[in-house]
Length: 144
Image (cartoon, rainbow, N blue to C red; front, side):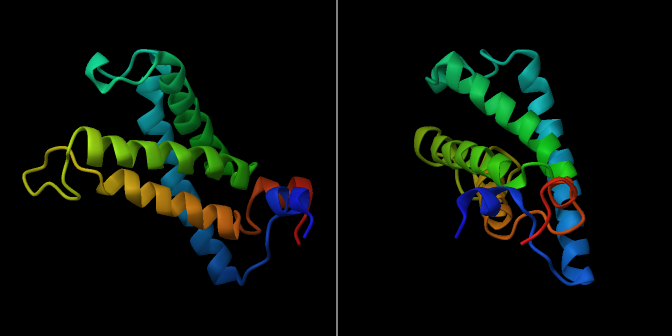
């Protein structure tokens, strides 16, 4: 398998599957943009000091969420963006679960780690499947 082709080219699916991937990309891309937008305003200091994450890691997470959200939305470098987003969401899941000791789901509406874990799984899905044929990846790099 050619790794460059795998990372850049879109995979062909049925129209229904491609439309489902497009809808998922739009919803998840917009959500990441909205989550990343306030973080990109103060990229090295958006977390409380008690979190213990250095500013550079906060910057990487902010860029990953905001920039990765834009990439996912348009289906541009989707698998590359998914790597960054997946790693960011795994770290967020670990922070919530092990550092902040949040539950999987908080029934009172407080902090939990189910959203970060869900986004990590979605990033894995985009890494495995790519953006589908309704994407800039397909227009720019073709399909395999």
